[in-house]
Image 1: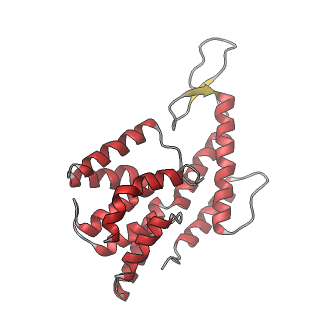
Image 2 (image 1 turned 90 degrees about the vertical axis):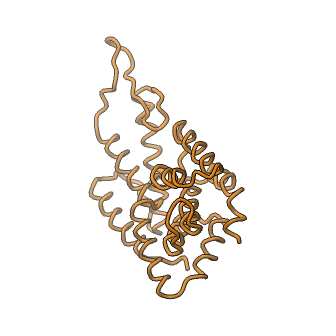
Image 3 (image 1 turned 180 degrees about the vertical axis):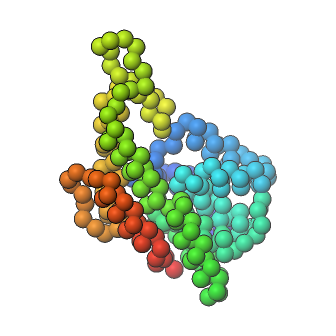
Length: 231
């Protein structure tokens, strides 16, 4: 089966593609450690523990390989109850960036479902998109960066009068000047906005962004992900 044949090399393929994909964040040290651990658990046959980590630690942060593996384990009944419809929904989520390998698997599993199962797959997929889809995760990051950019920074540490204010980047867990932290958030914010507006097919925002604008964007994202067009 194609599903079985893909497992050994999909991880390296997805990671290589993520390096050039703006929807994928560079994993921090902790995430990389979790990825290595869960792959070792899977390879050693500890499927229930591997499923738990793929499903609850990696899939929710947009790890496409983990989302694929959750679907694979549902399809095969490895560490979780066998459920082809649930598997198809996870495969669809894993394929939303258009990676050819994931798209191929999605097409195959959807082709094996009857009409009633396809309808249930649609509903399950929409629900997963609302929680872990790229657009939803990106909007969450946009709101966090908006808060950073809208709040005057006083810094997390001031060692003595006249020294540089130091913040800690919560993603990379490294200290940097308050000014650098703000610049990084601004770049991430504008890049995220460009991604979301591009995915929605609307004009880019070049001026000042307000909380109302972000809320309006949330509504457009919700409308967009409620429609499925990947069959």
